[in-house]
Length: 332
Length: 268
Ligand SMILES: Cc1cc2nc3c(=O)[nH]c(=O)nc-3n(C[C@H](O)[C@H](O)[C@H](O)COP(=O)(O)OP(=O)(O)OC[C@H]3O[C@@H](n4cnc5c(N)ncnc54)[C@H](O)[C@@H]3O)c2cc1C
Ligand SMILES: Cc1cc2nc3c(=O)[nH]c(=O)nc-3n(C[C@H](O)[C@H](O)[C@H](O)COP(=O)(O)O)c2cc1C
Ligand code: FES
Image (tube, rainbow over all chains, first blue to last red; front, side):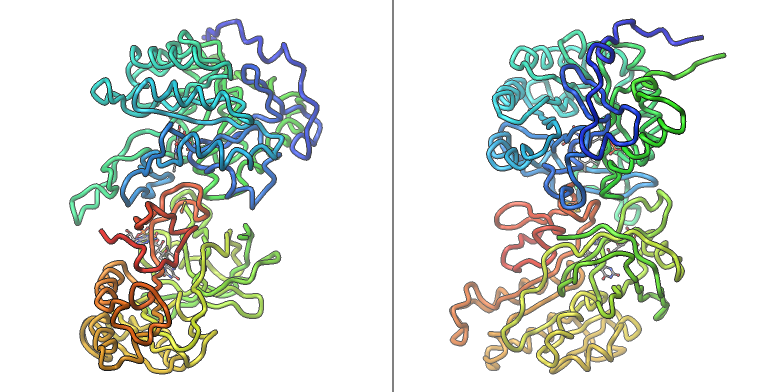
């Protein structure tokens, strides 16, 4: 049985491919993709929270080579984050409970954005709040800032006004917050989905119907590690979010489910370590990918993934990466 | 600025049951490390262990980077299985370094903490009063070199198998006794397990600057610098996983540290 997919995926054909920019587009095949009105020179971005505000990794490679930089999640007021330990390694992955530590939207705009404006790479700002009005305020201020090209809503955090239910796990709450943010911004709006739900396709559909221009997934999967001698959770926050190669099959499956459910572009992530991993996501239906935990293991992982995609196009005799997006074959 | 590079393992020598010495020959140009800085080392090429592990630079000579490590868990065990000729991924040098002491100084090493302090002792030969503590005699690794580089050495072990039996911080307390006033204007550099550093903070707090005629304008008592350990994921300041609570909020051990002024730290 073939997958039933909605027909309107026009974004990929309406805009002609970008001419390759800098070294990143070198090698023949076209790597550029569009996420709503956002043109990316290649489909590889960084995952929020794994790349700071871009400064640290700029010491290892030229940020101009990335498809986009996605920065650490911001809230309207600064957050100090969780007590330590905040991270623990798990088999082929890690749990983190950073607690959304961040410098706040205003300090970001003043102190970090000028640095990012030096690059020809779009900046996507991840943001969150624990009330709807905090989301609105953050979105408003980010939309007015020079050098923010798209915003990504992290809805994997609890809603203070609704008994701390996680925004992204309740369709109604999610609809409210996405609709409210949609009204305040003209920037491409990406909704980052939580995998901690029963039907991620449904959640994606809610995001789409509420005005999202794209969805990104997956955020981390909630997990726990127990110190058996102390009989306590290892993390001070008890639970944390699982990321890294361990989650990849789940993430690929979810991207595929979302691809079947919505028409808007998908940014896929979860455990991408190399080009082959990234291609799994594109084939399953993602228009772009984000690389997270892999940056920690290898600071130039993103660049190696871009180069690996170029090689793949060549080897497969393809001229455009868009040809493989959603090309998954099912059945005979 | 740190570099991301590959290095050839030239030696991964067993020193005794617990400790190994790893010698790396970088395959590209490197930046010369300062005492107190560290490197992130990939401990194998599988996804388990996944993350790199932090190790202090133990020695840098003839374009070789040397690390002294203790086998502790999965990562260090995996590292111990690497052979000479293997290539490993390295990032560094990372973090800040020990500030140079003006004259004599006190160094406090708890166990493997000696790895981080020896480069300082080597650079400032015979200027350190070294307090070196470990569980037992076997765990006093690099004792001969430590002794030869120090002005005076004070050894403590938990079981009394070498030196004094007891806590390193107790022997420091005796040394800092106000009747020996010349000693306690000396800066202190410490590296070791967190409980030891926490104990040290209490000892140091007993010597407020008001008691210090020889204080040369230093604020807040004996000047004490500690090198901290936290679990790390990125090692470069991007993940916020390795933070420590300070009087001015959370700071990243890998970036603003690993060396901190002890008075800055909020011990929990
Ligand atoms: C800046 C810095 C410099 C270091 N320098 C050296 C060095 O020169 N030589 C050396 O032998 N070790 C050093 N360490 C410690 C070393 O990084 C850990 O021993 C190593 O990461 C343990 O990995 P593992 O997989 O073997 O152990 P794991 O299985 O990860 O852990 C084993 C035990 O060690 C604890 N642990 C693990 N990592 C850390 C950590 N980073 N801080 C505190 N406790 C931890 C765990 O909670 C557990 O109880 C340093 C750490 C830091 C932060
Ligand atoms: C240390 C760390 C911090 C993160 N912080 C955020 C964040 O602030 N906002 C967000 O939306 N996702 C955050 N994430 C989730 C990642 O962006 C990504 O969705 C997830 O890690 C899966 O990708 P990976 O397996 O490639 O890391 C964080 C992940 C990690 C490991
Ligand atoms: S280990 Fe990532 S910020 Fe320090």
